[in-house]
Length: 573
Image 1 (cartoon, rainbow, N blue to C red):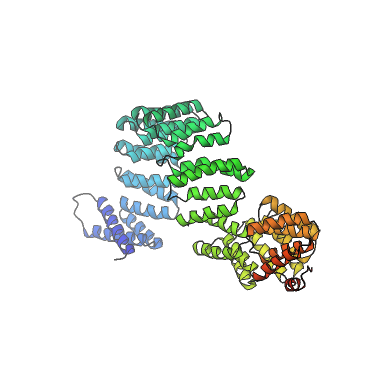
Image 2 (cartoon, rainbow, N blue to C red):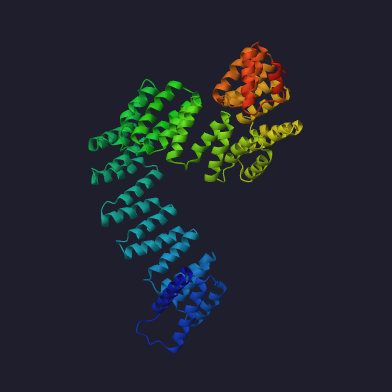
């Protein structure tokens, strides 16, 4: 039997039971009664199948023949409710309740219909009746109070919870609800008193003291919060939340952030303390390092991530946090190592993968970028930014056809993300550049910078393309320098600046930037090697120039003039 058929059978059995309940007990079932029951069962069947147009006339026919059949009224009301016709559903249910006042199902369903039509006070009245009839039913009291709150009768709702507590004793859920209601009323004193009642009833339950301490912090009562945290530590000396909370209180008194971070070490060394709690304490400082590049602060936070790596060896979060700190400190290769270790433990976090792809791109490691991007697309096939990195790697290797298809696919999923849209359009501009369609490239890049004028990746790329065209060198230099301020340490940016300075005969500046780019790239970029060779040739170091030109040739890249430079042992433009 299928699940649908099974549900249908159960539903019809329920309808039959309702029909039987609407018949006077002990009454002899006549032929007429049997006929009515048959109509009722058929109507129930059609309703359960969703055939409302067939069920409605059957139930209306039944009610004409038996105007007091409250079960039929209930079933017809259910159809009207499903069709969002709440007024006729209410009338039918009110009639059914008048005929069967003890039927809780009718009242609960009518309350549900009242809720949908916004008649919260009427719904509250029904649950009040149900609660009075079954005074130990928690759900009825909670529903009664809920509808009173919805009808803006908050004071009455609190009294409902008080009444329930008189019957059952103090109850965590009712205390929490009253606490929130008092907060909504702006009565912080009463809100605190509710939690104090809970603590008085369960003085050794530290979680209730944590609730009160957190509330005191929320309303700015720091002294009272600290008193509660000290009470918690008296009960549980190793409680990490309380320890960290009191440490936070000392942060303002600390001479600096580093002193505060060092005070956290004992809690971070506690393996029972939540890893998320610890990471949460580090996040503001990681952001501060991102904003300022503060190297001493980064080192202090890294000490704590190392503690976390030791205490929580199966967790990827400390490794990812360390990767962030190293990245924002300009140590991209070290950051990459941490991120790779993180995904070995947990490869489901896209943000970590994106950082890996970003670093590969920024360091100009295009072969590795392509491999990593393929892995990411296997795991996250709907991430447009992953397609950007994959296509960017293909563009650098000259696979134009594949670049176009990947960019088009990514554009379908980019949505309203202007940052990623600008990156993808920038790849189109790069393709036009590679095909020497410079005017089209310029048009596309104007669109790119209209979408995202601070796209460091595209600023550096366009600056590089202008240098390659030997056009607008000053503009190229300005754009590349802006990119360097936005995202320091990118190989393409330093390459573009160095190349522009080389064209302007600023050989000292060119050497500084090209050397930095080579160091970060690991001498993998053939064109970068060639340009450094050009610099050496122009400054009189022919042997050095030949060495770098030969390295560029061994990489299988470089300009069309590279072989001639090597053969003639001199620079050509």
